[in-house]
Figure 1: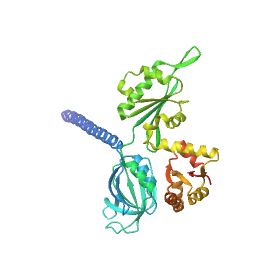
Figure 2 (figure 1 turned 30 degrees about the horizontal axis):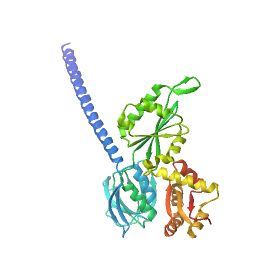
Figure 3 (figure 1 turned 90 degrees about the horizontal axis):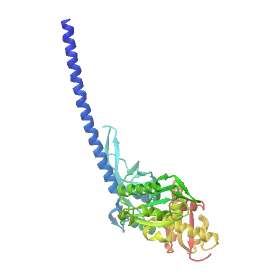
Figure 4 (figure 1 turned 30 degrees about the vertical axis):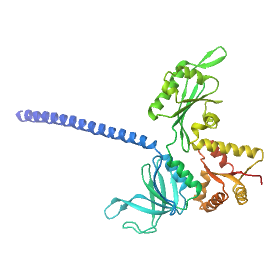
Length: 395
């Protein structure tokens, strides 16, 4: 009995000690998790800050065709994916697994490009190494993964349109613009990006009937205002485009008491409150001033001009054969190429013929615009074979 009591006492002491240990462990874990959370928050804030900056041009040697860059966001990665061609020389940091030690070693290597792949967060460039390295044999296949904030060197035979694109990307940061489209029962929020626009969210509101005409309830106006404030506080937009059919935008502004926010708002008319209205708003002449730095506005206008000329059988051609012929005649004023066509030609290893067409366009003082197929204008161009041109004169 005495032995059992002592054992029981020891057991209770042991349980008590374990309980205290568990409490200390949980406290330590909470401290670690809080620290991790603070670190993540700090990193997220850093990423937000980085994403608002323009791509950095660190060094340029036009004679040798060498440019050293530091992309700051995924839009910059997308731009680079359009500029890097097969056989270009890319230098960047990469990791190589050392078999003997079963560890990864960070190396700086140069590769001759064979394939370029853009994802939402990374630019993957695959090719063969151009020089011997302690851990990498010359001519071996390797992939350099570029993320925002990583430095890379590009050496290539630059075309004029590529230099222009690069200059645009390394200038001042892009205007930060929020688009809010709404009617009596729906609101749509989107933000402009270099390669188009991104829908953030949509809202549905209740409709109250007043005689014949339907009006949105006042609390729906307030919901829209609150959402605009939320996005503006988070991203500090330079301009907020407010578009609606009829008079609803004026009604909403009467409910907006924040004068500082009001100063950012540009009103515009649109015929609906869906995604088509965003494209409609981007084409508006009254918004050209604040959208002049955004490629999508320019691209949509060019595609509209192209289809206007096609409809009246005017100064335009489309399809690879007819465009190539127009270039040879020196008739091309502006060459329009869908980015999907470039990707397809690269994959099919027929990019050389497209590159020759672009070089000949520049030789005859024609301009080149790469059209993004993520928006409606790009899809329309893709339906024409991915290539078209506006002409100086009829042929």
